[in-house]
Image (cartoon, rainbow, N blue to C red; front, side, top):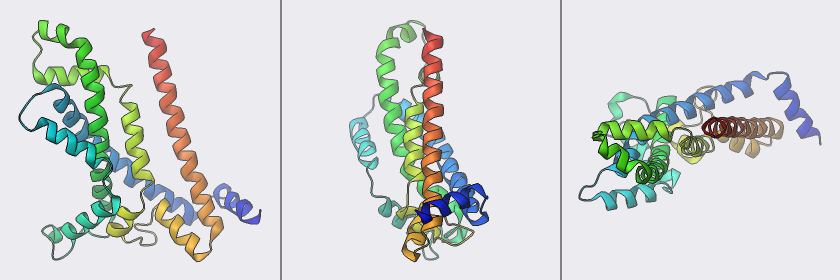
Amino acid sequence: MPDGLDAWQLIITGDAALYTIVRLSLAVSLSAVAIAVVVGLPLGAMLALTRFRGRTLLIVLLNCFMGLPPVVVGLTVFLLLSRSGPLGVLGILFTPVAMIIAQALLVVPIIAALTRQTVEDLWREYCDELTAMNVGPSGRIATLLWDSRFGLITALLAGFGRAAAEVGTVMIVGGNIDGFTRTITTAIALETSKGNLPLAMGLGLILIALILVINAAAWAVRAWSEQKAG
């Protein structure tokens, strides 16, 4: 299998084009997940612990947005950031910043919805204790988020997986510009269409390896936390 051998050779020899794409992909996806965590964790916890008119509708919408078509998000961000759009003055279309924004919009609903479910389940367990201690809303959110931190790793993994595997959204808002906005997934699609299978396969192998390493690390952290709790 010559293409497979060539793919491994590109990885082992540290091909510059391949690793430039990998670095950009990691920077964009991790930045998007970080933004989504800052927004999604408190949003999910707030929905779990507070009751207000329209809460049920908001939860339904949040769950619906988990399956929002990526190309729709990409098109929306494109229209907002285009020259004729309301945010066109920023001039960030076809840049990594636009890609981060688009991926963050995809990841926020996932993290928020999973956080809401996790914190709501934990609230049922600690409701009496926190109420008796007269802990306020912000204190409840902070306490339950901290106590469920290891369980929320699943939400973070789901978010990273969505971001790292995305093609349509980053293609629309990033433009797949060589050396500037070309990510692993968009490069795989492009190089496969060009017949450059070694580079496409090499990028695919690295993407699989990244997912495996992150999941293994998350499993190790959860196993350690369960052992420590036991």
